[in-house]
Image (cartoon, rainbow, N blue to C red; front, side, top):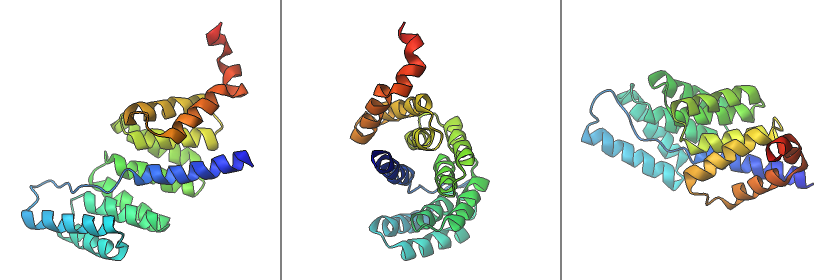
Length: 198
C-alpha cells in the first residue's frame, strides 16, 4: 500500500513538475509589437485565471498572426495537456519545437505526455534533450528522478536528479527531500554503494 501511495504521489508530482514549466513567453524572429505583446499578456492572464477556452482561442489567434513564435504553440500544448488531451498537446508541442528546437518547456512537456502513454524510454529521451539544452532546468531533473525511481527502479539515477532538482530550487520541496532520505536509507541503495563507504 505504501508503494502504491508513493507511485500515486509521484505521478501527481510529475504532473506538477511538468506544469511548473509553463506558461511560456512569446518569442519571435522579429521584435514583437506592443499590440501583439498586449494580446499575449491577455492570453496569459486568461490561462492563469483558469479560462482554458478563452486562453486557447487567444493563443490560436496569436499563432495565426505570429506563426514563427513558439510561445503560443507551447501554451496551447500546456492547455491541452492539462485537459488530458495528450494527442493534441503533442501536436502543439511539436509545432513549438519546429520553430525552436531548444524550447526546454516543450521538450519537458513532451516527456511528460509521452510518459502518460507508458512510453518511458521515449519520455527519458525528451527529458534528456531538455537537459542537453539547459542542464539547470529543474522540472526536467525532477521528472527524470521520478521516472528513474518509479518506472525504471534505478535509485542511484533518481537520487542524482532529485538532488540536482533540490540544488536548483533551493531545497524547499519537502516531499522530494523525503524521497531522497528514503532512497538513501533503502537497502538497495546501501548495497549498491557499500563499496564507496569502505
